[in-house]
Length: 152
Image (tube, rainbow, N blue to C red; front, side):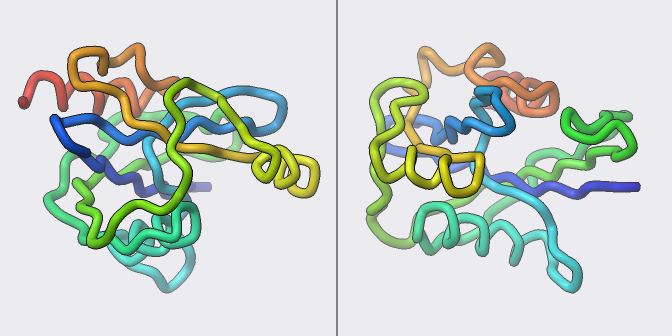
């Protein structure tokens, strides 16, 4: 079974990189914003939907950055192979979602979401100088973080 994921690299002022800090199934993950492709959806439309759902943010999807080109088993289901697709994303409006200055700094609303759904997330920018493979948790995200650092 394939699980197709689509992620956006959104750069802020001074080339800061937007990341999502998430608490899912009892574990902490820092990753790029995005999520799962739904049936009948294109990859760019998926990413636009994910930014709208997660951050209430309209974005323009830019250039393709990377698609997984090796086998990666899902961290959540060993019967699923993950295929991740990454694009640049550009905010078309000011970001209204709360942005944190430190990792996993969940507020009361986000903790209430966790109690309801068993998962929650928050967002922050990582300064370009501090950004790298160690800034994200998932193996595919680490590949993309490395590509980004080499490309800029």
